[in-house]
Length: 101
Image (cartoon, rainbow, N blue to C red; front, side, top):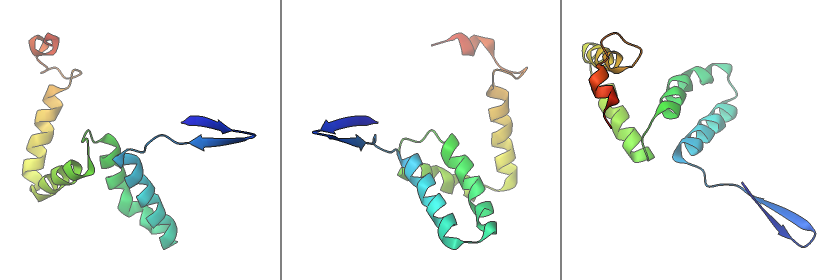
């Protein structure tokens, strides 16, 4: 956030929002407009997916989500098991690959 001073007044200029910030703000607006308490449950999964996403744009994020949603549960489990094996806290993590740059 930058502060611009003009004469006696001060103008606060906010930094450019990322697509993640915009999407989370849109979800919050939808929840507030609905007025029902149960609507937050519909957006919990999407919030966690957006906040943990490494996609540089919303277009790429949506394409990854479409691909993920099209998989059946067995395929998803297989992917999760591969990801779990790659984490450094796991016994099966290859230390030789971790040290390479």
